Length: 349
Image 1 (tube, rainbow, N blue to C red):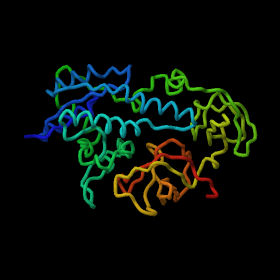
Image 2 (image 1 turned 90 degrees about the vertical axis):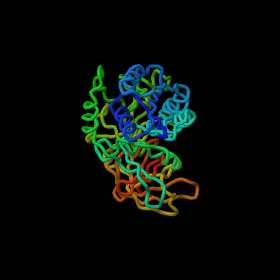
Image 3 (image 1 turned 120 degrees about the vertical axis):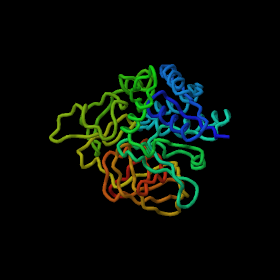
Image 4 (image 1 turned 180 degrees about the horizontal axis):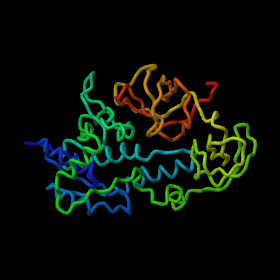
């Protein structure tokens, strides 16, 4: 008897081909569509695509959980001057958290997605995650907070393929009445108007305040902290002899700290709540630190502190270390884990 796998089925090319490939491998495949927001419109399309593929289809309504654990956290984080990454949080808590519990109750032994990441047997035993073969589409960064104990139960059929190969193979299926679906949004609940408009509608406070330099000298007025992110250059409205960048957001004083590019660099960072996909290292470990999606990575020394935090020392200073973002750690292409950035290190640390 074949094993049952539930595929997180958006109705896009990636999840559709992932489901098709798993069925070719002999799995009993269930297409599971997540309804996460009130405005979500992908359900009917996903149902039509599942029908064309000959797959049983079910929609799982996770709107309350998504609102409570992802959307509200996103709004609260911005109110605290942080730059959150809702996709990292959603993967850990919703897709590989609540959804996994739901599909297990339906009899699934595995949960699969269309992420471009490779799951392989680890040299030390068990399983680990590696970057996708298509480095331009690699999504391992977003999976850094998966529970390690879940790795035996997840499948990523697209990990060895490029995006071009996926699109070609989808077309070759020749599904009647099914056109090539559009690329999905990275942040599914943000409207076309952008995150600032979303925050405004959500009631996030954005009172104007002072814009100052690192020494506290007044430079001008900002339009509300939610309009700015660390590293931002455009839209500051300041006349200065050199380009200025956002260095810090200080919600406790409602101040925006700006400065020249040289002041944007930090020698390292402090991070909270580490999650390891390998045996947790004791003491210090060398790894490549990736401080945001698309960051090329930097060699770093990672020190586990007694209070559970991490201190990360970069081999070369890095620009725009944003509190609230996620930092991922790699050994070569292997994803070791990650943590939430608490603050950049000062040059003197």
